[in-house]
Image (cartoon, rainbow, N blue to C red; front, side, top):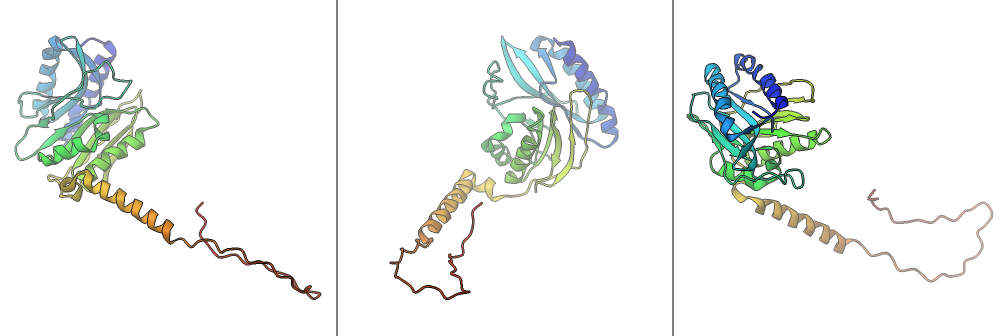
Length: 275
């Protein structure tokens, strides 16, 4: 590991994993870019984390910056509870401008295990519906997401993650630095939530459903969204054509003066105000 700050941050997270395992956690998700490490130094890290995972029978999904062959990757590694080989995932959608020094990944990644199909993504990946839809078509029932918010956007990006889960009928566990921890079920119900800061360690636990649910979006993809958009345009257009045109002005005719005590009233057609 190359930076003391990352070493201390990882140590803080790791020290809390045994307690989470005792509370029944099967998977622990750590945030995005928790630490920076060279590939040559990775074995010295994977050994202790693998032993921690197997010793407490819990999968550990850790977000990190991996330096390999002169390039940097925003990655996540799953250390399996069964002692199997760690699974690596590289973020496939990088934030423009902020991550221009990183190399994007190309492949999906699944957490191994008997009778389950758990997938990995990282933060901004969830802004792209097709990535999660492809995971669902490959059989994913849950998605584990290391993330890093910017404070003010915590609610928005946490709900973006929940939306991806609703679209595809899968559970989503998202752990963000400087933002929100959220766990949601395949129907979008929020099972657990907490806010994080830069000075404290926060955790949440929740029971995830074993299976995904079928959704129309998974079957139709973006065609469903385009159909909804076209229907909206059609409704707006038809409303414009059906709106009555204003009455043409009438020719003014001279009227006799109103008698004392009376008043003249102007009537306008009732209508809806769009404000």
